[in-house]
Length: 178
Image (cartoon, rainbow, N blue to C red):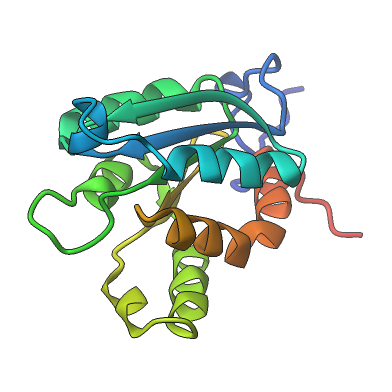
């Protein structure tokens, strides 16, 4: 007898048993960093913060502010990490396209996580209202956009860090209520 999976259970074909639930990837989106004109400070700061919270950063990468390149890299990183965190490209400048690239590769968006980051950010600076960061699900991975400044990226990540383990469990199909 074939059992139908509930709509909240991920398709088993999307699960990669080899990828640890704490595996994370950090993608810095920056034209100047990708050209080697500027040192990436945000990516290492985000990776360090994730490490302190028991995530294992398995990949760190830098890509230019090009929508197609960002999309391609996000898809690649979701194959090796359950949490993919981007930093940069979330503002309103013409080349800030990280939210569009993220939305294009995600199957579902998780608006509340981005809303919480903006809310917490606005407690420190009114400029946080200019963030267009998104968070979404691709397969069994969660993609989270953070601002490009090291302080903004870490503060935004810290604002939602307590939600991430539970979100990753739900995405992996652990939906039982205790």
